[in-house]
Length: 369
Ligand code: GDP
Image 1 (cartoon, helix red, strand yellow):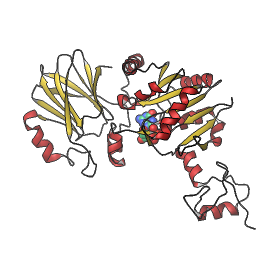
Image 2 (cartoon, helix red, strand yellow; image 1 turned 135 degrees about the horizontal axis):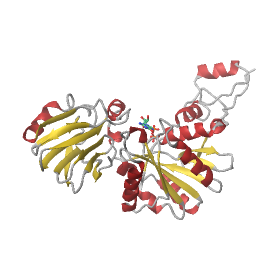
Image 3 (cartoon, helix red, strand yellow; image 1 turned 60 degrees about the horizontal axis):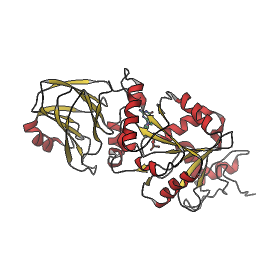
Image 4 (spheres, protein in one colour; image 1 turned 60 degrees about the vertical axis):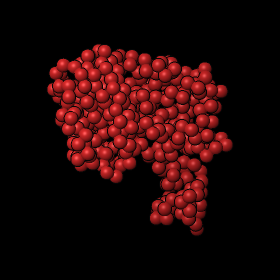
């Protein structure tokens, strides 16, 4: 007899007729499930959620998302903004200040594994705190973690366990900061609650969020990632994103520069050294990223000739705005920031012009190393 089988994730009756409807499972998988006894079966959607935490990213101005953020101010909640340490200013959600209310809010800086081995955690946290304060955000605590390498997760988990005794914990972040990887790592380390991931909609909206029940009756809530135009990740195709994303701790590469010299970071970054002494610039980017030194006088022509091939990514297929520059003068030893790519350390007393497509991700900070 053909019995109905129910998805153990969402409770929908499994069907293979309409991929758009609840409980969909491809025919072959459904047949297989019907022929096996006592199997726990997920519909395709719950399976994906369970394994990849796939929820659709949204725009920060999405009405449903704003409503969700608004509702946080009225609830008792802990808000966790996951940020990418290599694209910090673009992943810090400055708009959160409108929504935090009386709630506690913490910053979790992810991808710490990529920082050079000799980096001081206290310096990185000080910098994060200053930047957050400058944007009007006052995090109660700051954690530096690697979701991928499962570094420093114990203290974050113990903080969450503590805080979730009387409130739910909401994870928010822009896309590509590693929020899914982090939540999966936390669930994994918390143990056997991992089979309980379910998805639910925020009441009255079409917005998905994932609620992970905790033993204490409260929830970890994964909200959709927010897409912003200020992230390189939004503009690059998957292959190019893979190429510029460092996999191993950044290793310094030093270039001796004179004023009148230019460095290209593939086709995505450029530094013109305008004024200062002959000095060394230390580049921290993915190991396989092409860095090229040339004379500033020839730089435009070189770029026009080689963009998309020697100077790639971006590949000709990526829809990328032209390079646009910003001048910086270093008052002390500083890191020139190229959000999503890496940074370049220069001594004090240098006048430089740095470029990225449409100037996205450009910035400067006191040198961390
Ligand atoms: P989400 O969009 O915020 O959910 O981000 P994902 O979890 O999909 O991760 C985005 C990218 O960052 C993926 O390529 C991950 O492999 C990578 N990633 C996530 N966490 C880490 C980490 O701790 N270190 C490093 N190096 N990469 C990470």
